[in-house]
Length: 449
Image (tube, rainbow, N blue to C red; front, top):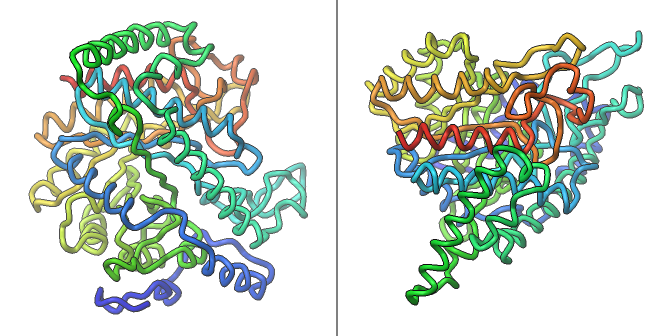
C-alpha cells in the first residue's frame, strides 16, 4: 500500500523510532494477532471520515463548533449498553445546549470505541514493593497489580477491536434509531442531573425546544427528517498502538485513498508527536482528520514543522491543534502559537483541553481536577482567541455519563472528602454528567458572545 505522498506506506512508520509501544513478550503472537486484524472489517468507513472532515472545515471559520469528549481510558468491563447510552446521552445534552443556547452547529466526537490504550511516563511502577509493568490500558494489559495482569498480552488487541465494534453498533442504533431525536431532549435528563441546578436549567431549555418543534409541526413543517430524528456522531481515540492502527488501515474502493478505519478522528499525544517519530510518520499518510495535543513546553519551530508534515496542502478540516496549557500558563503560551499560525495562513481547528494540565493530587491522595480550574482555562482560551482575532473552534474533555466523584467543585461543590464516594477511573479523573452540563452552559455563553 504505497502512495505518492513522499514514499509513505502504512508500514513505513517501522523505519522510525516508536515511543510508548508495549514490551510484548512474544512477537510471533503479536504478528498473528495483527494478521487477523487485517482480515477483519473496518470499524468506520471512508465516507463517514470525509463527512467529519467537511464539518471540521466549518469549525476553522467559526461556522461550527467541535465538542470532543469521553473516557480518559475505556475499560473493557464498562462496555455495556447502559454505560454507552449514558456517555452518549451527556454528549447529546452538551451538544444541544451549545447548539440552542450558543447558536452554532456542533460536531459531536466521542472519545469512545477505541480509547483502550494510554501512554505512560514510565515502563514500570512499584506497587506494594513489587515492580510491575505500567498499566497501558485494557488493550495492552490489566490494571490489577499482579504480574499476570500487567504482562502485555497482544490478544487484548483483538478484544479491543470486538469491543469497539460492539460499541459502534450500539452508537449507530442509538443515533439513527430515535434515541437521539430532538423530541427526546427532556428524556435525556438523568435523574441525578434533573434534580440539580444545572438539570433544572436544562429542563427549561428542553421545554423551549419542545415548544418550537410543536410549533413547526402545527404549521405543517415535516418532522420526519434526519436533522430532527437522528444525530451525526463520530468516534476518536489516540493513535497509540501503531501495529493496531496499521492493521485497520484500508484503501477506499471509491477513491483509492488510505484511511485508518479504526476511528473517524485520530490524535497524536504530547508524548508521541516527535517530527522524526513513528506516530507522525504513520498519521501523515492517512487521510483522516488528525488532532495533535500541545502542552506548555512546546517549541514553536517544532510545531510549525509538525503542521507542515501533517497538513502540507493546508486542507481545512484536516488538522486540529488541541492545546493543554493549564490555567496558569495559557495566557503566556497560547498567543504566540496563534499569532504564528495566523501569520502563515494555516487552516487549523483550535481546540482547548482544559483537563490534563490542571491535574493534581488531593489531600486524601486522589488524582483530581478542580472544576473552577477547568472553567478558568476554557474562559482564557476564548478570550485570547477574541483578542488575537482567531477562532476558538472546539473543546476536548474527559467525562462520563456516570455519577462519579472524581473532579472537585461544580454546582454540587464536590470536595476532597467526597472523592471516595464514587471514584471509578483507572486513569485520569473525569467530569460527571452534571459537571459536563454545567460546563456546556458556560461555554454556550462564551460562544454566543
